[in-house]
Image 1 (tube, rainbow over the protein chains, first blue to last red):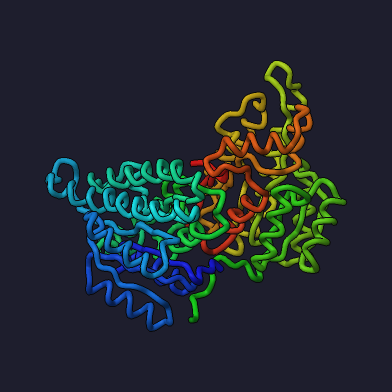
Image 2 (image 1 turned 90 degrees about the horizontal axis):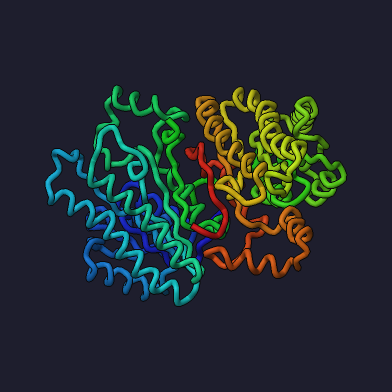
Amino acid sequence: MVELAGQVAVVTGAGRGMGGAVAAALAARGATVVLVDVDEQALAGAASAIRAAGGACVVAPADVSRRDEVERVFARADEAGGVDVLVNAAGIAVSKSLLEQEESDWDRVLDVNLKGSFLCLQAAARRMTGKRAGKIVNFASLAGLIASPSPEIGYDASKGGVIQLTRAAAAELAPFGVNVNAVAPGVVHTSLYGDSLDDPDTAREITSRIPLGRIASVEDIVGPVLFLLSPASDYVTGHILVVDGGRLLH
Amino acid sequence: MSAAPDRSRLDGRVAVVTGGGRGIGRAACHELVALGASVAVVDVDAAEAERVTAELGPGASAHAADVTDVKAVARAVEAVLERHGRIDALVACAGIMRRGRVTELSAEDWDAVIASHLRGAFACVRAVAPGMAAQGRGRIVLVSSVAARGLVDHVAYAAAKAGIEGMTRSLALELGPQGITVNAVAPGFIDTRLTRGIAQRTGQAWEEVAAAAGAETALGRIGAPGDVAGVIGFFCSDAAAFVTGQVLVVSGSP
């Protein structure tokens, strides 16, 4: 069991999906979780679920692409006792190919997925280097590693960026005892995919390329994130942990 | 508060660890037992297998086998099944290293290194895969090395470890539909008899070698066998249920 009693974890994208599940798992292990999401209503729901289960959390609504809002989030974390863990799970997608994508689509996706990860990473790192300890997990994606059959050009580029952000930050922060890693999920049952996975043909087409023969559940991603936050991965940094059921091998 | 079931635990699971008598293998045995598993320790050195088994306590068993001997591996796996009833995880750590420039390394040394890693892993996977497939569930963890990227004066070892990575990906594709995940760890410089042996042969003090190797890493230290064992434990657990075909570098550097 990853025991996190007394630790403060900032989780972005905590209102739903993988970020929400990671936040709940960290709270269940004793961490005080600073819940960050741009959707205040989703955030309130996530917070009440955590509190109903006996966990501790701080609600910190913010758009992670805005530095002033990110600074406010980390000020809340400081009040809660300082930042021990950061999970950068906030992310958006615009399902448009290169030929269709508007400049504004590109800017928004890159702002949230890549700049947002950078702003939170920088704010966390400035605090963690001082106490020479910390664990950071970014959310990359299989879409950052391979060309997707249904390209979302900005999303794919943003996740490629997150991968190199992870490696570069890991190299810079390692001397301070701060580990930076990423998970790279394949297709996961979350709202990011809307209801497209409900279509049997789509689901079959996706599953046929996955050696383990199924689409990931949110819990399939939570386990690897918890591993990267645990002492079991203390000698692992800058790693992109692909969690895709073997899809990448095809 | 009540948490969901802890997917990192291995209670009730049975793991076979080859090369379990020392180094990373021995640390893996201890980690898996700490996570709740019963462990079968396989080593070519019967005394070392017995010694580690005694450390692990009553749930463990010792099995002497040379992993390059396909029949001996099959017999050891039979004995494990008889003793423990099932095999949920295979951790294949057995393997040797021979240093030497390509013009100096003997063909016999080349064969011995390649066989210990590749024929050894092949024999072990072959022996455990049918049972795992019948269960519809299994975990295989192979041991590569950062040397797979290339390591001066270790051409056979580097080739063997690169081979392990190819095996990992091929086996993940082949065995995934049966519910078996196959992953590898790729350790960097870890404090084991293997690395201490290199220091000894070059006539340097271990402390100096360890300090110099540690300074080469981003985290500023060499690894302990337990650092690798923690990752092996993760791969064997349900927390890694959807991770397959991966090589996880455990080197203290990006």
